[in-house]
Image 1: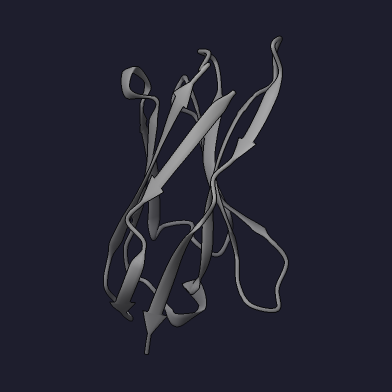
Image 2: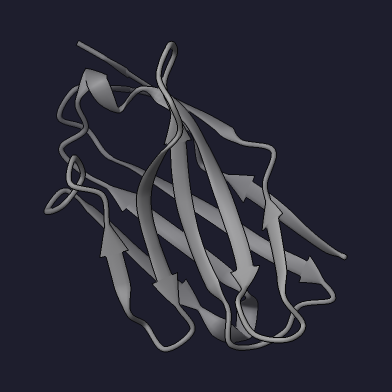
Length: 118
């Protein structure tokens, strides 16, 4: 089992910044993909950003150039630096930690609320 602990959400004005963190603990293996997804009210869950153990990052179109994902492998922690926030970034942000090679697993965090006021 893997547990994910998220932090860093909150309320910020448009144009501001927030930093999310997610730490994986328990039976954590190397060679994983960690990332963030979000779900806004009335919308489907969408990709925000992911990063592999080797540091390869991928971003959703709506956040490209404003958000930066990074990870600290020894700490099993992924970070999401969110700059130039917009009201449409308001959502619950979920951390994901998965492994696509044996042993395969896929875990999600409980979510953290990000609210951007105009």
